[in-house]
Length: 380
Image (cartoon, rainbow, N blue to C red):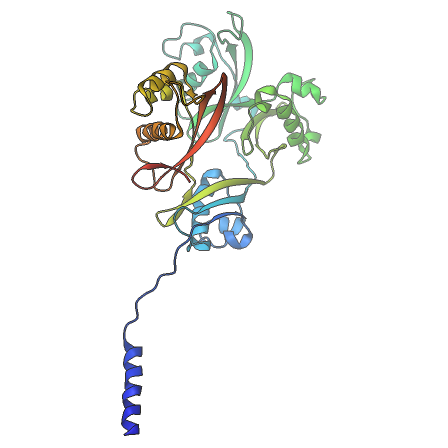
């Protein structure tokens, strides 16, 4: 009898073990992280992708393409809404001109050249006009084609009415002509190259001399230094002896303009099960935005009329007829976001900066909202 009971117990264990067990998925969780890509991270990419071997990216666009692939391989378990601030290496920029000879790239406009631009009856050009004129002069440009043009430059309010002689450099880059930075006569003179306004053989024999000169020029130029941001790129034209026009590409690393590899940082978001470049929107309210809020149902009629007129929100005292409560503000911004952004993605973040009026003082305040998949909500 004891044997029968033992057999029954044994069969029960076997049957229980054979039953299909339910699949239990590990709970997903969100995380905010920061990381610097190491060689091992770049190697997570398919070996056919160049960053897996170079350990850098050629452009910010490439970083936005490949870093999500790295994060998907490195952190697949993180839930939607996770964020990553990623520091990565940008490869040194270089550019090979289609033709660098001075004889082929430098050109002085004639009187007839100005009439190539439809509707132009003057023998001078503004910057906008000469950019519009270039496709008429060079009807079949090739990639990295350089044109160093001497012409009569006129800009309303900036030059005499007769214009001034100018020489500027234009580069056909990524399918469009763009004006690039050009070393001036005064800059050549500042480094002892003012006799001919070109660099000489001893300058180019060192890999650091010309980049060092141009870094100094760019940092001293207020038109550049007052607006520069880390990661900005400048293509700079300079003359080398009597024979060549050259272009060098430099990147601003936060301290100096350099030609070597630089570090850059970008943000990414986990959305719909995959990593994407962070689509966070930074919105500072414009005059039109305040006017739109005046047409919504947020706040009181008096408060809406006031904000549409004065372009700020009165938060002085709750007894004011034009007072905006925190709830009123949230409702106003949610209505504005829904009107401005008709195709947001789930978990996208919106930072809204607006002006408030409090007892005679106007200041800026920022609120953060997110899109939960069906509506904009204030971010907790």
